[in-house]
Amino acid sequence: MTVHIIELFFADVFKRFSVKYNIFRNLYEKDILGLEIRGLNYRFSKSIKKIILNNKEICYTTAVNQTDKCELLVLGSYSVFKELAKEIIAIGNEDLGRKITHTINNIIGYNELEIQIGGKKFSLNNSYIFGILNVTPDSFSDGGKYFSVERAATKGIELLNDGADILDIGGESSRPGAESISDEEELNRVIPVINEILKLKPEALISVDTSKSKVAEEALKAGAKIINDINGFNNDLQILEVVKKYNASYVLMHIKGEPKSMQINPTYNEVVSEIYDYLINKADQAKKVGVKNIIIDPGIGFGKRVIDNYEIIKRLQEFRGIGYPILVGLSKKSFLGKALNLQIDEREDPTLIAETIAIKNCARFIRTHNVKKTKYAVELNKFFESPELLENV
Image 1 (cartoon, rainbow, N blue to C red):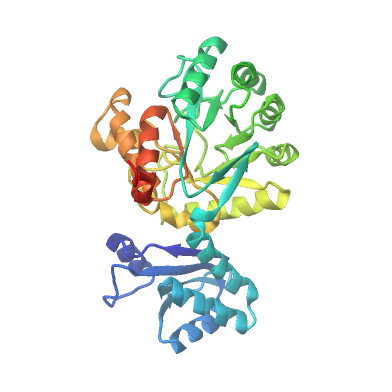
Image 2: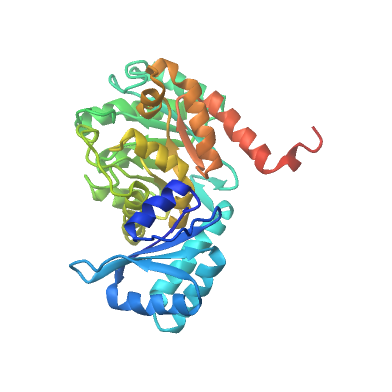
């Protein structure tokens, strides 16, 4: 059972949910939210509906499915949802009542969260930068440029000096259509670069972009502090045990399919809801294993249509309800190029605009190629949020 607070104040989003729930009346308001409960027992949904209607609030349910489950949508505000949670607890369903309260608290308290990475605390009242360092011959943007250890280390130090908070090193391309490589090949590409960068800059925080537990273990042994797993442990469940063993941080990303085939006609009924369910369920699994420091990534460009990527960024704030920091990687991706008819080397300015919107919509980690430009977006957003910081300027 999933609790999801949906931004129905977007008129097009409200229209889609009106179709789903057969809402024929004109109930749209510019500040309206929806509390959707998915996977709800149909009989229990009647009790919930009765509470809501007794309070003169508005709700709808879908038809019951083959497993005696349905979905329920409540229209209202955070205060309405909080009162509903109390009454649900009062009638004996503490699990659902607490889930609603927990989801609301995750959203309201998002900027007060902290995550510990290595010896450093990152507070979510600010955004931070993952500088991309691909040590591959075939990545879509910079494949082959930093394939030698010396060139890769030089570029890594440059990204850190430009303002990257974390260096994200990838040894296997995840571009659409990319073939997988062996553990040994990936280790040969990544580990020497980690060693060289930490020799030059011992305080550097390093993330390794891998879905292989063997590569993750050797990278963490070498001094990396984050595993950035695009496959969400679908390919290798042991990766969670490795992350737990080293008390590392873990980036959990949504992907539909695998890089080789992910862009072959991906489809969604409601893209944000489906990604939300995937991430919350996967995060719960990781937490049960003992992984503590989780970052969630909706996976822009990974098994998504162009329209899906824009929808995700538009409604990015909804993912706050899961309760973990949000990371996005938008840098030079094809959804920008296809919308604006731009080649890869023409996408830096659109990247910066998209990253700025994502930061405004609560992305707290931005994975990017151009650290210098993204740093401007991070700093300016900080000043827009807290103009008092410039009082003496």
